[in-house]
Length: 339
Ligand SMILES: Nc1ncnc2c1ncn2[C@@H]1O[C@H](COP(=O)(O)OP(=O)(O)OP(=O)(O)O)[C@@H](O)[C@H]1O
Ligand SMILES: [Mg+2]
Image (cartoon, rainbow, N blue to C red; front, side, top):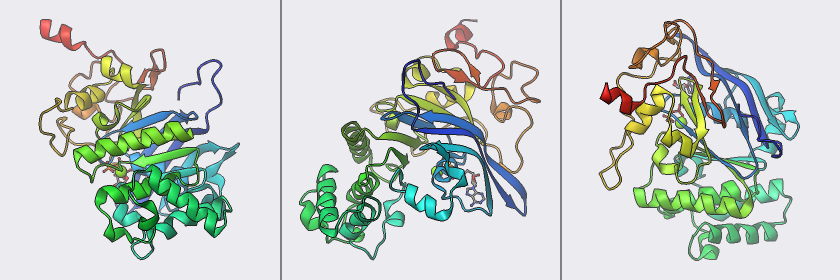
């Protein structure tokens, strides 16, 4: 939604008014409701929100990985001068892995168990970059080394089950980056890993991103994991962005009550981390039965405007790339305790 700063280059990816609906017996589930954002070369964007808010579906649809039907995807995904949503399956295959790549949460389900690591790593470069078998192999070994796999040459012949969870995740990253994509989508690639390895993986992607100039979209329900590497954060709730800001602004001056909730539930450093960090009263809405007005209003402690229950607040620009979807200003926590 933010316009590029004056003088900055065109975005590499522009998502405009993206909607995803699923038709079913229980009615239509409107799970992505008009999201827009730009991704600039080399930048790191974080999309954060509770389970079910539409983070995965919205990014899978950028790669044509949400099957239609049952889904209905509309809007614009502008990349390389065209709307990817108009692509044929053949065109999608050319884009996927090559221009836009994705790393998934669970490497065991996205790595092929019957193919060696080497085969899975050479496939993309052979297909998309037109490399010979030997060149693709050399590139694969190089990338395995870059992601911190010891004795990469030897690991080329390993099958996924012969590697630890952290190693498999590193292989996924190598596959994701092996074709030098312009944008890498990392969909919670660290949730299955322990905290130390999570930190290493975040660090690793960030380091490779600097080296290769790749833009990264991090998807997470735990802002704490990516706060150190993200430039901008998009906070997602019930299929919409409710706040957008630089990571510093978001921490220093959150403007949406949902963001307040998310940040308030971040654990204190050194304290045991619960699995589910989001602790906001109530549950996210059912996408087949969304509340009227602001989707967050039934859980909102403020509701300071009479329109909250009737109208969807617009994503309001409050300056310097910071925007919030509220009709009113959330009271300052300090003033609130004083009064
Ligand atoms: N194939 C499908 N058919 C119908 N509904 C679906 C389908 N895939 C996803 N949904 C629904 O879309 C909504 C958004 O799902 P999505 O997977 O994008 O959430 P998420 O934000 O990635 O959550 P999590 O943090 O748990 O990964 C959910 O309500 C989910 O049930
Ligand atoms: Mg998801």
